[in-house]
Image (tube, rainbow, N blue to C red):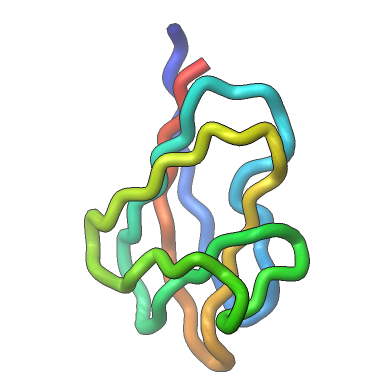
Length: 86
C-alpha cells in the first residue's frame, strides 16, 4: 500500500479536497484556522455540510468514490491535512 499526504486551505467558497476516485481510505484532520470546515459535495454550504470541528487533530475518514469538498463560514479559513492509502 502506498501513502499520500497533502494539505488544503478551505475558504468560504466550496474547495475540492479530494477528487472522485476509487480509493481505500482518506483521513482528514483539522490543522489550523479561524473557522470550522463543513464537508460535502460541490455545492456544500455551512448549513448542509457535515462539520469537521475547528479543533486541531479532529479526524474524519472518507471511503466513498465521490469527490469531497469543504467550505467555511463567510470570512473564515481553515487548513486541513489529509492522508490517503491506495
